[in-house]
Length: 192
Image 1 (tube, one colour):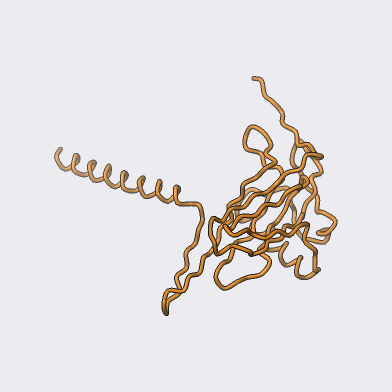
Image 2 (cartoon, rainbow, N blue to C red):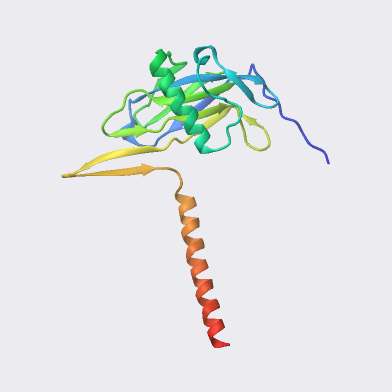
């Protein structure tokens, strides 16, 4: 069996592109913090960056969404407690798009700077570069979940954009097909 080995090139710079496609995100600023430096390019192993040397997190066993959420929460607390300055700050354009360019290899957290009463984005953890199963990708398109708060008379309507629409549709179709097959099986068993 022949296999190929991909390596991360430490001197290659990357970017993170975020497109909320929501005009309510216009002119909202986001900060990116480098929490981990890449110490092993072939295995994508990290050590805490200088700004986060006291963070109580292990960065090399991130396997679940819960692991990511834990690192994000601890990072956000650390940023507040120790007044860590962002690696970079960018602001969404009129269409809700922003980009962080010239990023070194490492582990980053992206946070909305100020909460506003009409739009709130979840913080996200970004691995630079990302491995797509075949090669390392240095230009990343991220889609953070966000809440869009709209005033609807006396009621407040909250829409959560997750990007999970396809997954829910597949789940519903699977449920309907399963129910139909079960019904057919019951009918066939009664006819015997």
